Length: 186
Image (cartoon, rainbow, N blue to C red; front, side, top):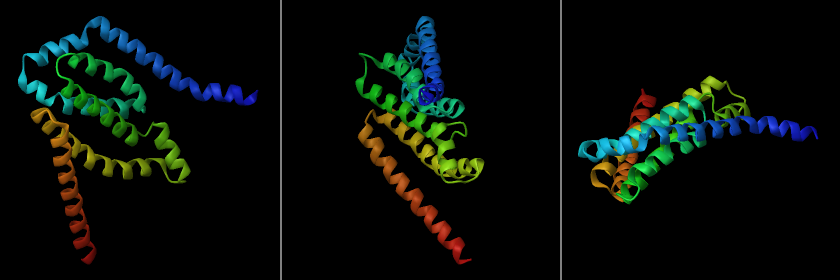
């Protein structure tokens, strides 16, 4: 019986986050956020090109601020799906993937995320030091992701964006290896 009460305490934050996310989604639906964004983007070709990159950034910021990727998914995925529903399935897939990637990245570097807290505790390291070391690696990938999502918005092809992003990532990692190798010799 003691485990039941302890388990209920552990689940309460997740239940509250989902409840708040459903509430925010309902408010967004009532305000017509998806229709507003769809109308603004539909008339502006440049805006539709940058939507995946913008959604990546919004998801990253929201997940970093709240410490939850799942809460970010539940808020932003319905907005993105309703923006592209029935009009451009390829861009909908790209924009949803941008939300998912941004949310996971933001959750990964958030100091209030449960996974980040558990990782630093499990490694018995200083929590803020752990966050700082993770942030350096994640931001390199996040910048490359933004470039990839801009390419995906321009070409409307996730395959092209994935290929170019992989090449850029390998080039950046090779450049960092060369730079660190030359600094080690000095």
